[in-house]
Length: 253
Image (cartoon, rainbow, N blue to C red; front, top):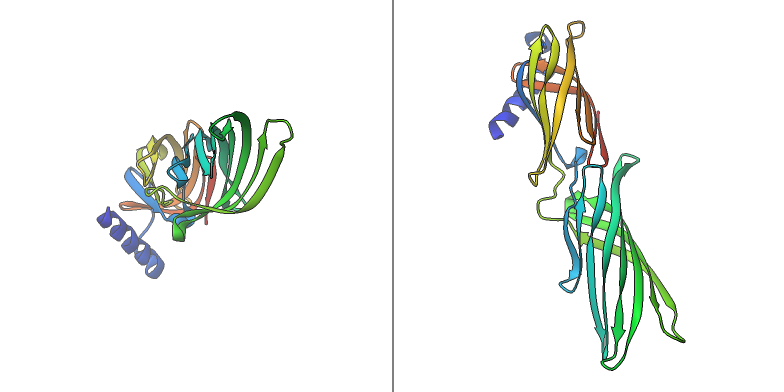
């Protein structure tokens, strides 16, 4: 991987300083492009907690939809509250920034050791991704209700943060194997995240000799990527890209 990155940087350096020395070509073969967190792709699947007794686990699907389960246990003197329930939400790009919305729908009981009463709570998180600190940061708001005579509901809101899963750093690779038949392009590709999650893609495209442009359309499941690039020996130098993957949109430049 390091050799691939070094080769690509060297080719880019030559293209900038000595453009007449390297001409683009009609692509054929294996290509890899790496993207940093600045153009990141995020799979937030994992477990989030404030302590081992209050946590939720989520799974993010290929469209960015979030589902999962949550559990909560709190004690205050002789009173204890136990709740559990489903998690729903999504991740999507708004204004070029990925935003995360998660709602916990909890039901359970409150008990003083002698009697129990039903309780419910809805907890909503609106979060952004902080790659520098490996965190989800934002706000929460909650409404909790006790289903008993003389009781009612209480609401609260405030700041919130969670640590990201250790393998969620936004870095991903676009890996392409291209076959070329008279400048008509086909093949297979995949978007590979740092946690190993892989989204398979089919490749169709065209090489246009005027401008030495490689135009590619990659599709698979809920994922689409369009690429305009210059192919040079051993690398695709991207000029433009729009990728819609895991509910997020990544654009270059």
